[in-house]
Image 1: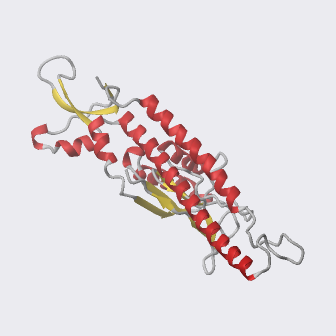
Image 2: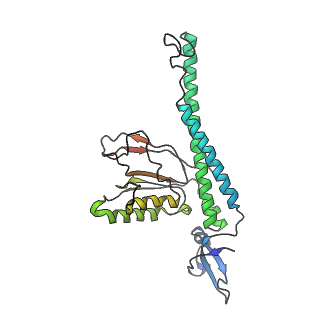
Image 3: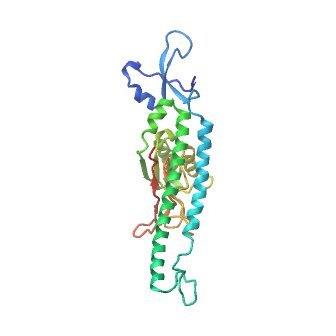
Length: 279
C-alpha cells in the first residue's frame, strides 16, 4: 500500500489520460477514505509497495561512486605521468634514445599515451553518468509509482537546459533570491529528469545571504551545485574573479570545468562536458 500524501481530486478518470496522470506521480485509488464508492487519482509522496530493493540500489550507487573516485584519481595520475619524449639521458635523449628508431618509438608512445588519456576520461564520464542515473532511478522509485518511474526512466536521452542572467544584489537582493527560487522551481526535483542549470547568478553560493542559501538548495533537488568550479588558481569567472557563475548538472555525467578566456566578454566562460547514460 502506498503512503498517500496531499489529496488532489481531478476530473473523472474516464475523461483524463491515465498515462499523463501517472507521469505526474498520481495513482488511482479506490475507496480512499474507507467508505462509499470513493474513486480518485491521488498524489503519492513515496511509494512503499515496490519490487525495487531500495537498499540494494543505493548500495550499487555507492559502489559506482567509489569506482568513479578511483578512476578519477587514475586519470589525474596518468595525466601527470612523464612522456617518453621527456629528457632522461645525458644529452637530452628520451627513454628510447636519440636514434631514428628511438624517435619512431617516442612518437608511437606519445600517440598511445594521448589515446589512453582520452579513453580514461571517456570511462570517467561514463561511470559518472551511470552513477547519476542510479541516483535518479532511486529517487524516482521512492517518489512515484513503479510503473510511472519505469516510463520516466525510458526518457534517458532527453536533457533540459536552463540558462539565466539574474539580478544584482544590493537593493535588488530580494528580487535576486526570488528569481533563484523561481528558476529552481522550473527545474523541478529529480523526477523532472536530466537537467542542466547554468548562468550568471550574480551571487556566490557560500555565506548566509538568502541568495546563497537559495543556490545551495539546488543540491536538495539532485543538482551538483559546484560542478562549474574551476580549480586553476584564478578564482571565479566574473570580471572580479568572484564565483558567481554556475553550471549545475543533474542526472548526467560531467567533466571537470575548464576556463574559456573572456575576451571580449567581461566574464570567462565555463566549459563542462556532459554525458547521458544509454539506459
